[in-house]
Image (tube, rainbow, N blue to C red; front, side, top):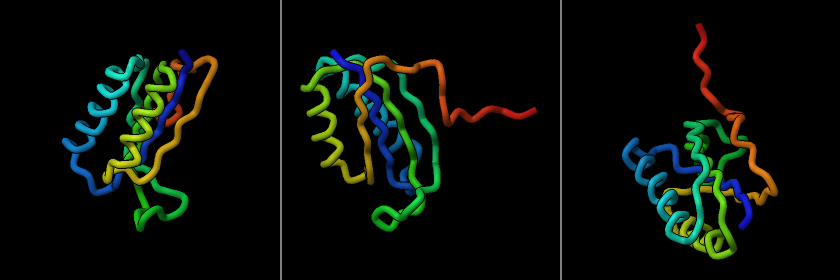
Length: 109
């Protein structure tokens, strides 16, 4: 099995419950297709560098998981059919970095 990071960008006008159901949908999809979710990071609403389908912002959800080709095929097939996702990226790794969160919202004192 290989390690993957999958980042999805959802539409900016989704409700909080829709984002939660989107996250749970892909979490269970990974688990049901012989994968193992290691970490899920919600980066929140961020500006896009360029407009994508007339959206200037998007909600970023980042999955770190372990899986095989079947897992990857299932995820990408479902993402392409999902109308609430405007863009996605999947990257394969030999080893995952689960300590650092690059978009962590640190509280300032």
